[in-house]
Length: 140
Image (cartoon, rainbow, N blue to C red; front, side):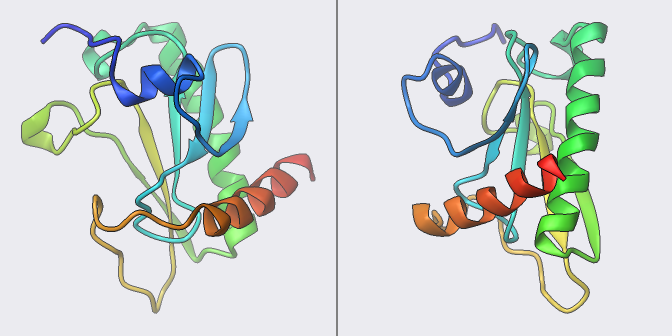
């Protein structure tokens, strides 16, 4: 499958559709998942085109991992999570639905079950509230 430059994450990178951003640097972008599995569910993507892990340049992968670690720490702090789950899917059979490489940062809580992904879209004001907390944790 060839990289589709019209996928939703490519459109976010081109500012063609909005996203609630929490972190951005030269090579990566982190933003809130609009259908979160848990409060604070955040995505990290490379700014360069890569459909999946197998298309990702090693240097870009290192940048994505560094951003994932930084943002995951902020998500854990901001959401007061008991743990953090990282998910990354490659291909439809593995559950990939957006064909631009991305890592899910999902806060986990001991007594709260994980929601189904692709469930219901969260209200923007709720996502903005979570993003504000994560951004603050990134600054501290």
